[in-house]
Image 1 (cartoon, rainbow over the protein chains, first blue to last red):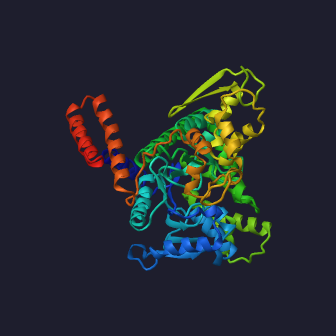
Image 2 (image 1 turned 90 degrees about the vertical axis):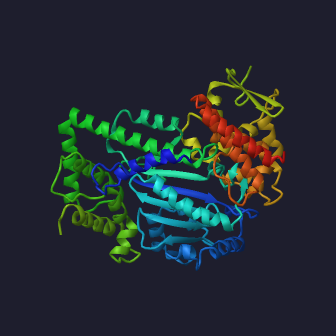
Image 3 (image 1 turned 135 degrees about the horizontal axis):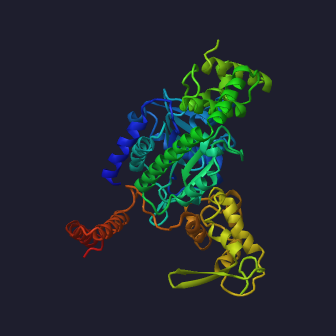
Length: 359
Length: 179
């Protein structure tokens, strides 16, 4: 890693960290490292008892170790469905882990929440995955956290490694550094601009994957995109981090430029759109998660462009968590057998209370 | 010349792959070249099962005329082969998009390496080397990194630094190869 460049990055990320919700385009940053133990089968084909052995082996180095004393252990199979949903949503763990639950565990740094966490996952796709999520554009900070934890483990555990392929992972898509960096970007104007195809192409050319944030939906919901590095082999960790950081700064510039252009070219249209969203959020009695996100995205844009005021300056990403089904159920202590309409109605109330300053 | 993949269209793209002493020639039509290189489709990176599916299916639909189809032949040869350590076969790897253990990468090298190369663009790790790996691999990696650095310093004509790096490389090489 080149110290000089990192110093530069740091000062830039520092700027972005002002905690202000205004014009927040990169909503959060996630960094993940994957490792497997040498001389063991990978998780996808190992049996329950084999997974338990791995779990025990890794826990040995975490339980009662001072370095990890603020981490709390969760065994997936002992959790209820709502709890599990919450964990997956809040800590962005792949829902695949919900299926075969035997031998799977998580260590989560306590006191952390939705969109700001460090977590050690055992026996998910790989034996060991270390992940850190930070709000805003904070790739380097998240990387420092995961690599710090990894350095502790590498002294204790023999990792599966090949001098050409790097760290060996269950999926060939993660070989090499086994480092994935992903950010969630809120791009309400780029998403509707005719240039969106060029934008996607540009990202692909620089080795980036871009998808809708919500998995399993082909369309984009809430103008939320997930952007991540696709290449993990043949580049150093430092190069991957630097590239992603540079790409994010570019994305921010592109979205900002598109916003300025739109405000100039169609001021009435954008105003109309924002107030329509406001009207729906204010008066609708039933709001699905997807519809809420679409409307909130436009409302957030209204605040960013100083077109609307008199509403709370809300954090779009934060609200996204709070209005999800599992959060509503657990926060309002609803029973598990709640109907869709009841949920959607509670959601509409919650949004009015949180954002429109109504009681 | 017909395309090696679809056997229908005229091949307009001719790839030559050199691996050690092996020279492979692959002839493709425009359409199949898109699929083969995986460089234009954004989704393909996402989904390994799909990538594998393409490779395998081109092997399964074999009319096996002509030569120059080493990758395809490798797939059909090893279709029933099982990994000696974990027992997984290629069919399962294709289905789940994951290998079964570290040894699979070695065992199914002929099939997996070209695929990895096409997804990752490289077969050379430039990332971190774990502390527990033997000293030699780590030193070799250091030497490789330094050589890259040396090249860069020469490009920007920073000869003083380049000389220093050269000396360090020599020192390291001496210690690795016990000279």
